[in-house]
Length: 331
Image 1 (cartoon, rainbow, N blue to C red):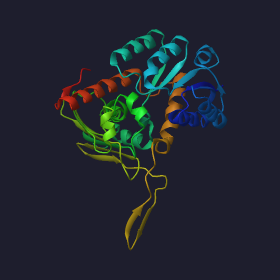
Image 2: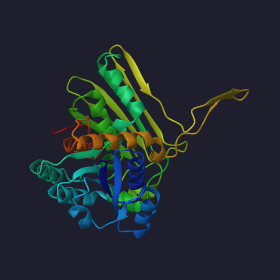
Image 3: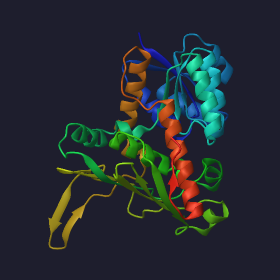
């Protein structure tokens, strides 16, 4: 019997998840909600399911789980609604931009014994999973220092930036979670810096388009994160971890991994345009893990607590950038 899922939010990320559900033999897209009717119909036409309201999805006992791809400021209320209606929940990060609201939401999740997974998809990328396995298998000894580079090809629209919580809570939060995931524990402090180098309008929106941070652990380990909203050469996603006995890297991925050498030198194919194509396998693996959780398995997934941890660290990054000094992380 297939797991029946509903998607709330039929924008870019909703379409990515709909594709992942359609490609999973154990899953079925049962319903789609979005306030924009054309967006709903686009998903239904391509991947199946039926248009439905939020209340209809909540009350439909045949629907096992929901995928929340709605704006961030709706996540916590929707998690609580579906938790009280017995649905397993997959929520795109973050649960909310306010840590206190997240804690209150997680209390409801705990009281209702709800399965909740937070969408840190990069944990499920095959290349990053192999990097993590190399660390866990002791192939580089004790991980001591890391470098995570994440650069988007262009900034999102102004309306998105206004609701995003800023580059640290929206973009870097993925890299913060990855740093914690790779190092295996929570950092003690963060030193962050932000600036506007690509578009002055982003400053007018109260955000940065270029940011960096150094996460430090109590035992001296460090991870450096570099973010930019402008990478003219494509979607730049790289990780390096240096350990006591060696180093492991995950390089950029391309739609076609070829290299041409001739009299002009060496040439490689362009990078992926953005996350929709770069992380296709990660999103598929992520949905597979979510379904495994629903059906009673215990996969290693990002939990609500992981989402809260990453948000608290991102909040500290904002404080550090504003103060110009390192901030201790209260976790």
